[in-house]
Length: 111
Image (tube, rainbow, N blue to C red; front, side):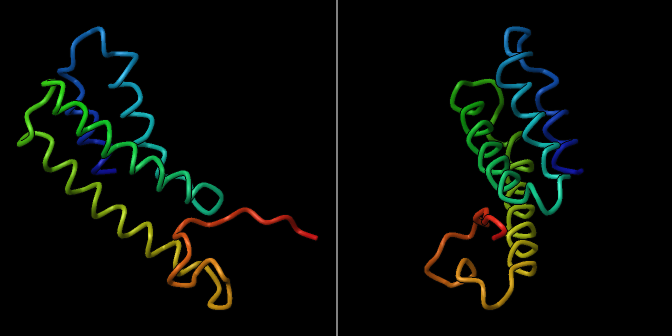
């Protein structure tokens, strides 16, 4: 929630032509993290997208790096927490949880 609030405040001063572009995408990505089991991997993707969009905002001169830094830091914290949640929900025998595999859950069919 804190990250979503930071993103909304940060994008409030974006130019009008970004209202349905970068600003809208950042807001959608920020609130996506509320989904639970089924969308954890999508949430990780959204957190990566938030980072990319914030860095792009800095590079385009839409926001100062010092202004975006708290949101980037919060995103990093949320990413670590979400990864810990994903790890805690994966069974120890799950091959996905192995150190050399991807940290993202892989959909499996129930046969």
